[in-house]
Length: 375
Image (cartoon, rainbow, N blue to C red):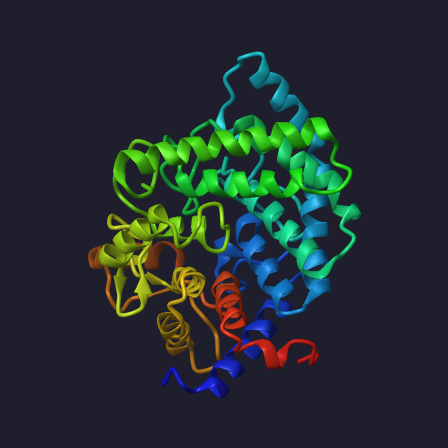
């Protein structure tokens, strides 16, 4: 597919918006993947980036339906969050199973199936998406504020704790991309009207502490590591610069981090999660190509950004569906069969992949002719 084929890119953008709409429940929840059994749930993390893409595309009602779902899930668990905060204040140990879940049914209920719960990034990322939506469209978000405050108080209390990362792995570490999601979520809530001076100051103080922690890692290495004290990189770090803008995408820390990611994890446009990845053989993730493309836009590398958009489009199925990852360059080819036997073929479609295509297309002006057309 040619980079200079905007009509085909627009067609895939239209298809992506349709896939996302079809994957949104009446409750407002976005299903991670409608065809992959263990992904037939809604994640705050995936949903945050999906809602941000829909907001960018002018799909205001879709984004706000998701924010409403998030708020209801959290308000229903406000007493539980209060209890957890009280326990940590008393110095009590809290097991991972006691924390809020990572994925929920589309109706907003917890699943009885065992999962890798205690992940903080999604509880920060949806707050960031909500804040961006408010600024972008000037919308009244009062209906979501109570739930947002529950989420903010939760991540504010537990940001110093090790937790699972974006990929639901490595429970014993503190992950830089998770810290970034917490920071931008707290910053967004601190800037909401009527939050109150005391809470806003508290959240801003936590943001400052997270930035100090991240800066210390950058001073130690010259770039950001996957987790505190480590030295490997992870492609989720791309979000620290773009779209989160916690650090300047064009600043020395992010440029050094992205340079290492490009050197170690990028093959011809596709982006691996991290070097030791074995999930489905450790393929290249389409959503990460979207993140890399957004970094390129933020730093003025527009031709490279368009190449990432084209690479994603090249890996759509014949009916315009985008998978989670592709197997062009596997890091651990011997591990692919194990996952296929366990869970079946690679998740297709993955709504997060479609969302990142939409977000990058919007930044490159590909989506602009579609916004407001009702298509």
